[in-house]
Structure formats: structure tokens, C-alpha cells
Length: 264
Image 1 (cartoon, helix red, strand yellow):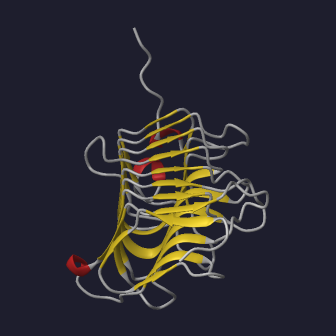
Image 2 (image 1 turned 120 degrees about the vertical axis):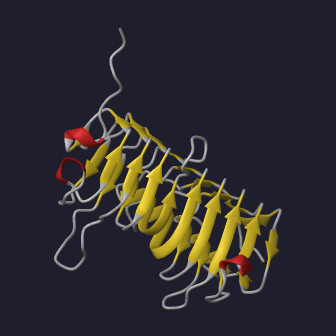
């Protein structure tokens, strides 16, 4: 159930469809329960995935902490109050899967240029991401949260947002019809929240709502913005999304994340 210098601690898992880390594997916990009612989702709670230290090449002894689903094989899971430390990809949710990720601490490995690394990666899945602390994905290809799906990134009331800090890019937004709210995105090396503007093969991120986020003190090491939305449409400031009551230092377009009002 463990490999050299990797431990799984304080494990509580409920429901069928789990594979726990075995010697020589690259994933610590994989959920494989298939599609179905979310009320029957597997629960992963109070799990610690830990490598010995932040390794020099940034990969650690395993590649991924928790993986929900497989290619063309969706799954359902709730990940609660867990810690995933020094792992190249913290939590991955595959296409068509459903998940709630709440109150987890996810910390990346030492800086590495060998492959992209993500604290949380959502790929065309439906996910709630609430109250997580995501940091340390600070290589040139590191992203705190890659949200290319639907659902919510941060709750609709204060206190349910995520703390996303000390990564390269804080949030990469490639999804549609999502609510991004009440998050604190700060002290990332490049852009705090980056909204994908589309390419020849992939459409722009659109029809999302960004509400009440505080995005400050980013682009500390490279050129960039606290908030950058490259989409084009009929939303806020000519983007394809709606931005309301967000606070930033710098943004493009300027209207999406204005700085706080000056004091008297």
C-alpha cells in the first residue's frame, strides 16, 4: 500500500471502486466506480498522501495523489479534509466525472520544468471546489487550479472560497457555465486568474461568472496581471464572461478586477 518514501496515512474511504497505491504505481488513490447517482459517490476523507521531501526534479515518488475516473471512464467521488503533499499532480478529475473537493491542503513539489504540474486539474468534468488551500506549483509550467469544466470554484458565500497562492499561474480557466466566487488568489509568480481566449481547436472559456474574488499581489516574478480574460463576447468589458465585485491590482481588460476604492 506504499512505495519507498511515500506514505498513505489516516485513511477513510467508503464505497466501491478504489485502487490504493501499490509498489511501482504512479497514482496514490484512484476512483473507478463508474457513472451513476452522485448520492452514491465514493468518499475519500482524512487521507494523507506524502512523499519524503520536495524532490530535486519535482516529480516525487508518485505522479498523482487522487485520480477520479480514467480516459473515457468517468467516476464519482468526494474528497474531504485530506492532505496531498509534494506530489506533481494533486487531484485530477477526468472527463464526465463528478466530484466535490472540499477543505483539502494540496502542496506541490520542488520546481520542475519536466512536465506540467497541477494542484487540481478538472478536465471536462462537473466539480465543486470549496475551501481548499493550493500552493507550491511554482515551476514555469505549474498551475494551482486548472478548471476546464463546469461547476463551482469557490462557494456562493464568503468563507467557502479557495486559497490559491505561491504557484506559477494561480487559476487557469478553460471551462464554461461555471461560478468562480469568493476565492483568494495571491502571491502567484505569473497571472492570478487567467481565462483562456480560445485557439483553432478549442473554444474560448465562456459564460462563466466571476463574483467576489480577491486577486492581488500576483505576477511577482514575471509580466502578467492579477486577472486576465482573453475571451471576446458580450460580457463584462467585451469578454465572454461576467465579472462582478472582484478586487484586483492589475487586470486586462481593466474593468474586470478594479483595485479597491482609495481611502478618505
